[in-house]
Structures are given as structure tokens and as C-alpha cells.
Image 1 (tube, rainbow, N blue to C red):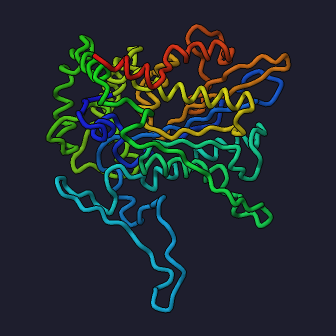
Image 2: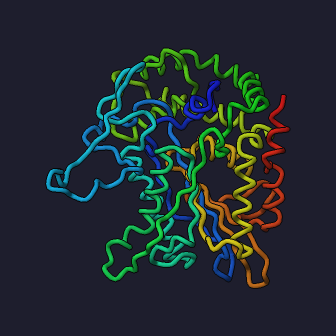
Image 3: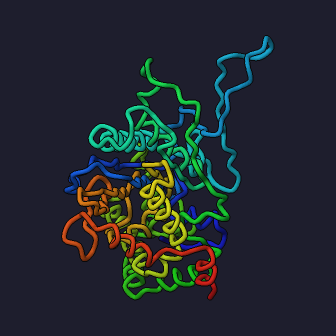
Length: 403
């Protein structure tokens, strides 16, 4: 989605997943439902969120201690231990200018948490109140939660679930569940929820995409805008349009101000350039397959296990990055621009009275019609065949990655 880096963690950040997530946009309720007469047999819900590199964790959140999902309560109070103490983590900056406040690059800000809570509220309206896919009170066995091993995506998943089931703690008669919700993660060096720089073929394909005639001509014409944006955002080395766009979204979404100013026209140009950068890259089926093929295969296995009854889960939540959503939207032929902050893609599986099953796709609350289809409801076998084109096993991935 923009300039590549050689190390995996660096690439993931450069791909638009490096600063406090959740900036401006929140998901709205679905605008349409498929014409099924039976409740859905399963729903695979995806709320993937990402952000760009920059200083979104500052300013408005400078006086809020970070939320640490791995934090544990202190030991039982002893006579020599303080009670009710608050702790905050202070990030030590070394090779970069410090940001105001106590946020570090890549942290979910309070504004981002609020956005993801709203996504959770929307999902509750859809799948608890409107469609009884899930019970009113939390039942962890009916949920499967997957996140990349990043604090902001884990926190995003937690906020979504909090938005779905915040009332459970508030009701005195709500049942207590001994089992905690498990958030499944994977070591970042094995992760397949985003494209990996250790895949030589993918690295080469992305480099070739950046040389696309349409993109290079546009990029050259944007040199004056690039210079102004780099100056305002303090870039000594240009990170790419996607990172710049994400940074601006984080700044605006957290109510911060630039030290100088960018015109609305410049900000619109950055947004357009980021969209073009992603569109050219993820129009390439090989890039899409190598970026997300293994994850797609697992996601479809989850869907099939739920439909067959092999898994008790009825709702699957995947919390990832913009470089998770962009290739997935590319697979579906639905990538129309860079995904806004707190974007979510929902795949619903419906079963009609005659037993036939369908997939209904929504992106940010709006029903989507897949290319070649006449309406937003796609037969499940057609959907499976489309996704099979992009799915890869680990062995197929290793073979295709070889240059």
C-alpha cells in the first residue's frame, strides 16, 4: 500500500498500520438485508481497523493513561502495599521526536476506542436485537476472535466486544461466565493477516506495481503536494501516500492541529493518491493472493466449520489492518479507495427455506454487490469458488513466493 521496507515489522507499519487506530469514520447499521426467510445459519463478521504512521496518540489523549490489554491487577493488598494505585506506561523516545502526551506510535487512542465501541454497538443491533444470531448475554463459545499480534488490533477487538456486550456486566441478573473470551493471535513472523516482506515474489510484484505508468505519472505530478505534506508532517523520508493519509486521518480524528496548515485541496489530493496507490497494487491478483491467501483459506475453513456444525461458533471477528481489508476487498472486487479508519467488512451466510445458502456482503454498513452479480445476495457456492481462486495453503504460499 506504499513504500516497502525490508523488515517485517517495518513493512507492516509502512503498510498503514502504525499509529493510534480509529480516526474519523464509524460504521453505520446495514442498509439492507438479504431476502431470506430463515435466520442466518452463521455469520462471519470482520471488523478490520488500521491507521497510518504518525502522531495520532497525542493531544486529546495526553492526559489519559494508555489502556493495556495485557495488564494484570496487582497482588492482593498487603499492609505494606498501596491500594487503588494507578499506573501509566511512559514511552521512551530515542531516534525520533517525542509526541505530546504519553502515547507511543501504534497505540489505539481514546478516539479510536470510541469508534470501535460504536462498531460493537452496530453489530449488537444487527446480530442480537434485529437477527437472533447471538444471545442477549455473552456466550464465549459462540464467538471466535482473531487478531494480529498488535496492541491496537487486540484493543480494537476488545472494544468491539465491549460494545456488543457491555450491558452484561451492568445487569445484576446476568449470568456470570467462567470462561474468558479468547483472542487468537499469531507471532508476527508467522502472521498471514497482511502481506509479508519475506516473500520475494510479493516484494518484487509490489515494486513493479509502484512503477506502473499511471501511478508514476500521477506521483510525479503530485511532487509539490508531497513536499508540502512532508514538511507539515515532519517526514525526512517520504513514507508513501497511504502512510501520509493515515497520519492526517489520525490527526483530524483525534482533534489535533498541525503546526502549520494544509489546504483542503492538499488533503483531498493525499486521499486520492492513497486510494490510487492501493488500487493499482491490489488490482493485481497475485499480490492479493500472496498478501492474504493463507488467511483467506483459514477464514473460509472457519465459515465451513460453523455451517457444518464442527464448530460451535456462530460469529467470527477478525481484527486486522488496512492491509488486511484492502486485499480482501480486492478479492471481492469491491476496493474503491483506501479504507477509512474503523472500517468493517461483514460476510453473512443466510439459508433460505429451500435449503440453499447465500452470502450477503456489507462494507461500512452498506450492502455490496459483487462483480457479475445482480444483487447483494450471492449463492454460497459461487462465493466459495471466488475465494478459492485466492486461497493458499502454507506449501502453496512457499512455492509461489519463490522468485
